Amino acid sequence: GMLGEGAFAIVRRLRCRTTGQHIALKVVQKYPLLIRNMLKQLDNEVQIQARLQHRHVLRLLGWLADSEYVYMLLEHCPGGSLRSLLAQDRVAPYGLPEARGARYFAQICQGVAFLHQEKCIHRDLKLENILLTSSDEVRICDFGWSAEVQLEQSLKTTCGTPAYWAPELWEGTPQDAAVDLWALGTLIYELLIGHAPFWGHSNEEIKAKVLAVDLRIPRDLLSAEAANLFHCLLRRHPKDRWPAGKLLNEHAWVVQALAALL
Image 1 (spheres, rainbow, N blue to C red):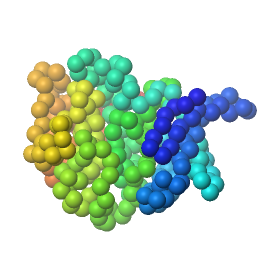
Image 2 (cartoon, rainbow, N blue to C red; image 1 turned 180 degrees about the vertical axis):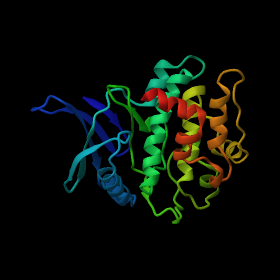
Image 3 (cartoon, helix red, strand yellow; image 1 turned 135 degrees about the vertical axis):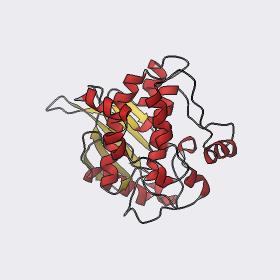
């Protein structure tokens, strides 16, 4: 069956004849990427995902290519994405219950801490790119925009999703792993509150709110620790944002969620 469709790719579910297990097959067209100068990006995605092995990073089981397509065999996540989960299970008009959001977020932090340790910046962390396994475990996916970098190198290209863009993306200034930390703040805000923290009818409006860090948190909805987490990640200056490893070790809300996972 069909699992999803992107701009230049489709994802289908396959069943292994010998084991009966389901896997996902991602088929990416080369030509549209070639004319947009994006083949290198696809190559990046495959190379990065083949190298990164972590419990909370989607596993690339194998891949091959012909003249027209690249075929990637990926771990299958029947739980769908956090985006679809939020649409189904939200406590309207808000997001997921705090304990459930915390459980997912702690796992995402573990995956992101690993990526950053491996000098890999995801650059498009959002609810759509967090999948759930049959046992309700998190898998970070879609490394199409990832750039493997030595952290001192600057990344000047703009990509990803505007609602999740950090201030430095809007300003076109050099970016490092801190763009992922801003995206983590945006992601957990949306998961708990039900909408993105900075939104507007135009990109200009979003940009103005992001640059002002115009952050509004509904009163009495969340614990003080959860509200504090937003302020640790959604900070104007990249170097002021808490790294994922620090959140896992020092932030009470994340530490507590982590303990509950064990």
